[in-house]
Length: 493
Image (cartoon, rainbow, N blue to C red):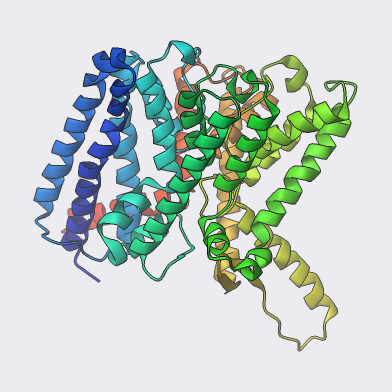
């Protein structure tokens, strides 16, 4: 194992490198002046943070005194991911303060919501927001969805980024080396975004709207350029396209890879997409039947609205076609319970979605079934549990079950504490549970708690929930633990 000083040189080098490349990402919205010259006055709002990011990154890069990429272990990767996400969120909040004059807390909330692909927002009227800012919000979600550190580092350090790849929450190596995996993910992601933009434009959505909604639907982010979200268009064709994009975003990259390769045998054996599909249709049917005559005038109307909301909830997107702040929906107990549960469940592993992840739920189901079968078999029988993930058939070990238990425990414990904290600010428990689940699982559906005038304590509670939920708690815990232990050892010396 490398010396501590060498480990931190690797960490500083990689964070510095990422921040220098981050400059390009921050400058991306400036291209909009070619189409909207009146946005020229907002260029400084992006030029300044881009300059700051480059200078900070270059300084760290030079301080590290490393001339070429070094192998990143999982421990170093956890610290790099934590510091990278903190840095990009804070720097990414600057345009919101300069251009739209949000407070520091509001800007950090918006930036965190963007990069974590949550979609909760501080803006009450997006029609009055700068188009450059609207594109920045969408692009943040697009980049954050694929895993900022994964895309940047996979492109920079190639096969030596194994530790970072796994610390970022990616367990499915779709190619023999990390650099190729990152490039394949990028290709799939960008291709879907282009196709989505074209289809949305063809079926009646303005091109600017189509571009933004394609990015945020695929990123399962949910930021919209309309106050009424997708429901404002009242267009069934657009809703179907958005549902497909949300489902694609909520499906693991490994599953997309086997689809692109034409490996349909492996595709059929992957339990995640089928579990997610069946869950969407089952819960949509339950809500439609239960709401018929109460909220919906017909079953078809109910199913149309239900399937969009359930798909949005389970994929962690946050688009809506109904007003969930309406008391009629808030008091629709079964629907609110189902949507909250779906937000907790989340989408596929290695996807842009948040939540517990369908793979973990699928493995849990297989473990339960296996336990029942094992009970019925002769006592000396030895059996194994297998689960397909992408193109790989994985043997489920005790370590896998332990990891699932840890993640489930952390999620439910945090959900319980966070909901209680929100309720202390005067919100009813049902609304608090819904809003916190939405934030922690990167969804973005809101019952009206999230607003610029909300108490600062509640705002930061949701901000922390978005950040920790995106990195699945353990990465943050491991990174902080390493930093604290190394600091203690340094003090003792």
